[in-house]
Image 1 (cartoon, rainbow, N blue to C red):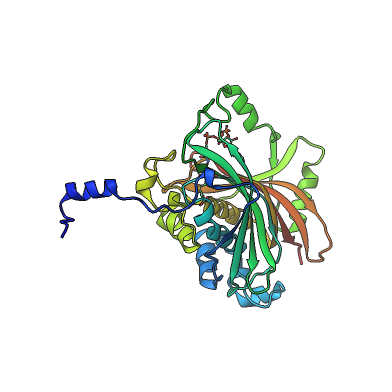
Image 2: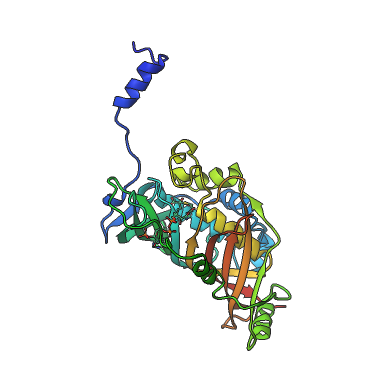
Length: 357
Ligand SMILES: CC(C)(COP(=O)(O)OP(=O)(O)OC[C@H]1O[C@@H](n2cnc3c(N)ncnc32)[C@H](O)[C@@H]1OP(=O)(O)O)[C@@H](O)C(=O)NCCC(=O)NCCSC(=O)C[C@](C)(O)C(=O)O
């Protein structure tokens, strides 16, 4: 029998043993290819409450039957951020388990409001495009279009396109050190405050009319409707590892400190959608949200690690009085930032916001 307790013998065995790989490298994806993700998940009320509770998304629609019914749902639906994490999580083993950083997401659309616990998901992705990274020779950049369906009816529930850095099997020659390498400090500062005027106004309350009135006040002046949210949430073991694992997100970035020691972040990092959900939770806590409609231009600018605190900043872009009697459509730009005031996520979001009774 082999003596496995002899550290030298064991180290020698490990060196010779083949590692059964998980996930795919940049070279494994072909443009146009469709990938069916096996895992799927059955949405659960417990999972939704865990996600919403840990990310400070405390809209009672997703907890209390009486409120859900008053908002037009037959029963308490799952939280939309949890639904998104379940669709994304099922895709990770095939698309990004190798350790690629989540760079951004576009065209997030919720196709059906009020998805019920007990719904079984079927998730599928199409490889939309691949590009070499000029700054990071060990990585390529891949974009996929992912859709989550109700497995029983075939109805699409949610879809988006996502872009990740994905490790290559073979590094290529690189010609730069980052997309903004070489920019002067002045150029960087100019980029940072390019879009915001001096005067920042906050809405009086969180109803549709409050956002519309604030935009009217800013109109014709050098002013914008932009404000910060008081709450912060420090990333801990639950948010960094438990939430992604509970939604089948096997990306090593969130739970394998050993593998991450030798990566650009040097340690495990928060799942981008946890960071985003916390920032959106802060924003929703200052808003009378009826329903999520869409998100666009979502970008992850920097790593968030255990001990970092995620805060939120909101810029109101538009308020449209649509067809609904009880709500209007508001478009926001949200920024998540850390305790050093560094932006870590930004994106636009459109939601139906309730009108005053
Ligand atoms: C990755 C880091 C280190 C690179 O930082 P950097 O300074 O090297 O460079 P950069 O300027 O930010 O971008 C590098 C390259 O990516 C490109 N790029 C950038 N964004 C996009 C985009 N949207 N679409 C297309 N391309 C994009 C950009 O144009 C550039 O191309 P180049 O190499 O040819 O010059 C830095 O950007 C960073 O720290 N970002 C935060 C990453 C992060 O923490 N993501 C969330 C956690 S990982 C995660 O959640 C995982 C998940 C969800 O579970 C899972 O996929 O399984």
